[in-house]
Length: 201
Image (cartoon, rainbow, N blue to C red; front, side):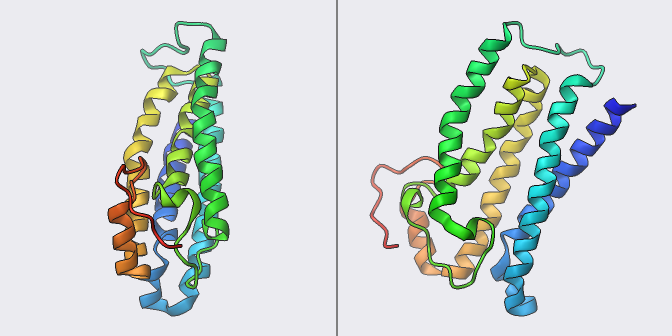
């Protein structure tokens, strides 16, 4: 029974995480409807989304101990230390992108504010370092758990995180207008552009 409960909770939590995260990156759109309280409201949405993301991470771990009865190998066909090494190799660049993104975005990572200016630092090279780094989390967990099923199912996060970035950019265009459109033209999505023009902070 716990097998199915855990899997259902994982799916529902993933949906709720996605729903609240998309809502959290739309303060400018929401402001048109309810005014400046849109920004603290979106901060609450971000917190709720984070809670559901943590639940999904926990579900991943529980899944390893209580997997679905599907015709799929429980572990990779190599020793655990190889999977741990792969997880570490994924975690290092992913953790760097995520951490640097949070540092350079400042409190905007958690609390969107209307007066916040466009970011500097790593954001002068790529537009979504936090999303790129956070996306790797799912494979880090999957490989540390040595679970091919979790590694495979984690592919679903690629379009989901792309949706997050798309929704955020839609709102940022409303917030910053032409300045953001110029920034977007000259800055890579998650891979730096070669002929990138320097942006003003």
